[in-house]
Image: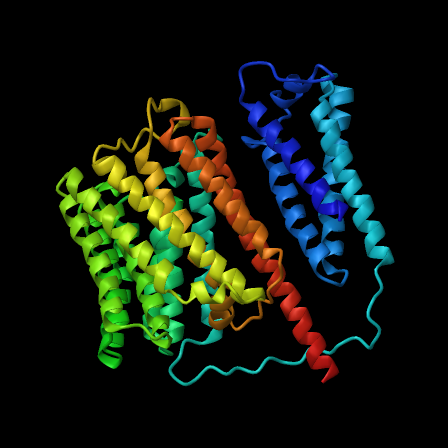
Length: 530
């Protein structure tokens, strides 16, 4: 139980050092040399602060320690030993530099070194004292493919998923730069490509791949292939419109996929998701024709909102909903869409109309979605329900922000070059609204559905464990900090809220990867004993 406490202590220590790295005023230091060490020539590696690596390491150790507490077995402890061993070695080298080269001691760095060493010692001791389940070494059997004829083979799914993940990581790095972390190691194209990489490169690729697998046809996979390649071109900074064209082709392929689906299954939910695909295509077409990202981001938001609403409407088939309730959902989405079109003509009233549509949609989802029943269950069902319900609350927050800020919330008066935290002079309703939608609403859906969608797409096991709540709690608490910082012009809150948003997403990816490792191990053991 001491492992997660130590990891949180180290995270707080590293976070403080990261904050002090760019500070101009002297900070609190018992040893007197903290700022000299933390702002000297050895405080960065290729432009990235050493403290940033510490934050990442302690976040990883916190996730692993939660696994170690909530699961039996030695595997999480063994990984903690490896990570803490590397961290302790690096800490020892840094302490040596302080003593022998810099000739100044950073007390906070010494505390981090002691924390990392304690994590190493405790995890190593726990690993040695944890009993190993008796039995012969399980044999790994060859996986048999169950891919039906005409479906996308499993071997092609992993590269497409990987391209989406690369786009996500690049978008996060560009987002950190837009927040105000002026790291010279960040490639120049990433800050400007942050939005397209997140929407089309990551989410578009993910949704396109999921649709291709769901309908058991290979040809829709050309959509995520196009967006994946387009993302790589944007990351590389290739001049011209090649990347934008590929993004538009990917959205066109998704729209064609829904034309096929609507012909096969003509229903309100397929039409709703089809309209979402058309909104994505319209946004990409406008972007390709020369519109700014602030001018098309509303269409990209409509793509995700309508897609998610359609998926939830599809599941509502299993609930005793009256027909008027189904059409009330359509009315709420129509209100949002009409307002979006009017807002495109630089109308504050259009943005407020869209805001009312989002609030109405949120109320509908909170009232009629299956999540309100599933939250009473346990395990994965409750986790998914909590994720969805919290996302619906953020959708209402986004609607309220749009109604309050008007056209500012949809970028009508936003200067895209004003992204550094020291360049703002007032509240930023645009940033608050966008991230309430894309982080609060959309990523809540991703976090909740990942343990279900990833196994179906990649044919891997992702067993649920309570440690999943760590990234969910961090995601929402950091977003509260960011939105409060945006609307009150408290830029340290925006900076750290946004930074912890990134940390929550990385923790989510780490938890999914660890779950996949443990799921595979459990499957091998089950096969070996059967």
